[in-house]
Amino acid sequence: MKILIIHGPNMNLLGKRDRSIYGNLTLEEVNQMIKLKSKELNMEVELFQSNSEGEIIDKLHGALDSDYKGVIINPGGYTHYSISIRDAIEVLNIPVIEVHLSNISKREDFRKQSVIAPVCRGQISGFGLYSYLLALEAFNSINENV
Figure 1 (tube, rainbow, N blue to C red):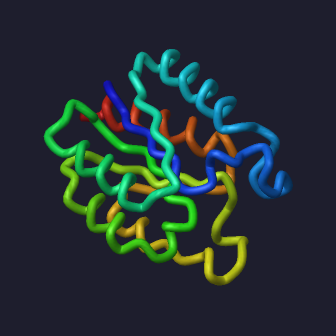
Figure 2: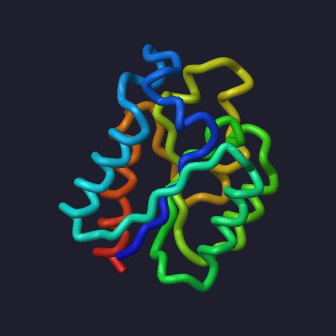
């Protein structure tokens, strides 16, 4: 099973951003843990990070008619206002799981609403790195129950 993982804006700054919210791990360390978990689950992952809304949309468009069985996306700040990313997800014929390192429901008011979540299979937030690993486990369960 091949899963596309999209890290949105500012994820390249992990380890430098507010560590009380985002933790101490760098994006490379997060990616290494994702790779280890995916190997354990006999999955293949493609990892992609961009600070550009258009590049994220292009990557989602590329998932159409591909061999991906699902997408895990951390849309970062785009979570709260990118109707364009939402629309790109909505057209996909594969499940998408939205993830966040922090619990967006416990953050500032403007961060509590996701325009992305309604077009996703589910949302996992607040578990740091484990949000991604839980999403991989979810895809493993989805695949087993098909």
